[in-house]
Image (cartoon, rainbow, N blue to C red; front, side, top):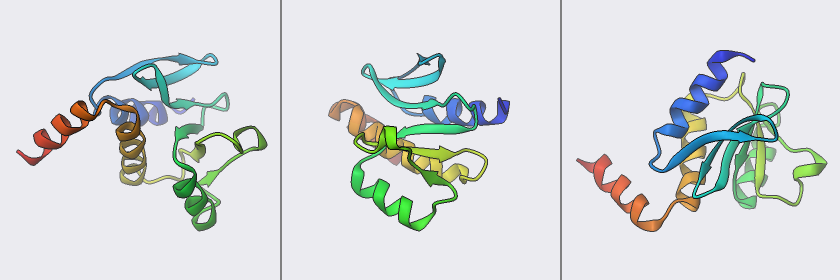
Length: 117
């Protein structure tokens, strides 16, 4: 595994309150309230990222080199991200959106208040 990939994902995931690190399917994973936010796939170069279907469809049309899905994920709200191609800030934004959908509303509100200070 490219250690920079895991370090970037880890740094971004832990920047959101309540994110916990563990494993899923034998690979590094990050959860919010017990639900998977993202995980490194077996190839160690792809991130499985929680995402609503509307944004997923947009990204699949806009950038098929960076974002893709397999038949397995067709019916699930996840997208596959090639970590070697995605820009760090873009990945952070997508991870934040996923986190916002999983975190408690009060935690999100507190996070927003802290960022405004």
